[in-house]
Amino acid sequence: MRTFSIILSSLSMIAGTSVLIAQPPAPGSYTAKVKIAYQCNNSPFSASVGICQETMNETPEQVKNIAAAFKMVHIYQFDEKLMQTALSSNMEVMLGTTSAQATSFAASVDNAKTFVTNNVVPYKGVIKTILIGNEPNIVNTCIDPKTFLLAAQNLKSALKINSINIPVSATLVFGCTTAYYPPNKVLFAAYSTTPVNNVYSPIPYIQAIKSINANPFIFYDFYPNLTLSSDTDPLLGYCLFEVGGGPDSSCCGMFDAQYLSACNATYAVEPTVEVYVGEVGWPKASGAGPAGTSANQATFVNNFYKYWVDMQKKKTIPVFLFYAYPNRSDNAMFALFSNSGINFSNYAPENGKTSNKQKDQGDIDL
Image 1 (cartoon, rainbow, N blue to C red):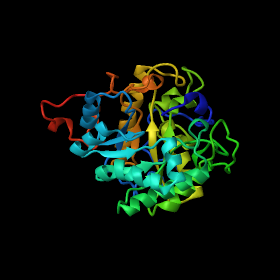
Image 2: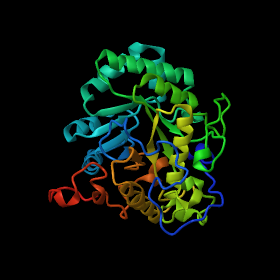
Image 3: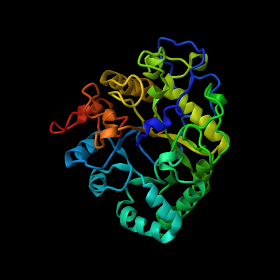
Image 4: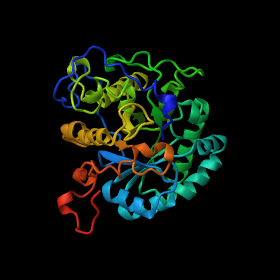
């Protein structure tokens, strides 16, 4: 869930003087490759691309459509309607928790036990990871590192008591770095109680996740349009995967460069922590950074599949698109299912679903 006025400057990445090229190269073409980027050995998910969903004000039809188009879904708090659908449709859920819930876990392991008993045990077969809070390293939704660690430890203990081995992780805002460019030079600044552009260093959160998981991974949220200075910024094509660029003109778009930067900075802290994507999106209207149009949103999503997912020719790291339906007015400009330029049935294999050719006639085209 985005707080754009807070994170606008923190997500910016300068493209330097690199030359843009007409065809985006395959991911991984960067000659000074970041160590073990694109790795998903620790992933509990079976598909490449999932969808984020705001469960407040959702309708049964929305849940049905999400289940038809995606195997993986990222929700921000427990929702019984969606969880029941996940069970019946064999979906894979990334389950978020609120800051208040995370704080309660830290206060008492009994609170974590109650959460697990009520919200996890009945759905343990479809929950693939549980998140501590949402973007705990920004001012608006901050969970201080000590509380975060206690919450993660107590939740992990509550899961263990129930013989459940679900990983515990977090989605972080990517920021508070010592450099923006190139990706293999980007490192996180040391943690300070004073945020930089309203973002706290991810370092203690990464260390906490590493300390409680044998096969750790962490998620970051990326919004390439926030790197643009205006609607007509020359880097718009680079951000839309229409052209390649970055160091040696070898990054597959701005998202690829952002992801590589997060990998480099994370591995410098804990080299065994894999880096996945909790949110990536593009707005179709103004209010969330430059170049927000329906056409740009469709171009970004379709090119994301074409140039970033499909070019890797294998299951990629888990990436969750933001987001399905406009159930909160302040995020309505990101709703993907109402964009006629995106047909998710074209990407069924990438989304872990049956291909379009094998669909029953009664299924819904999205």
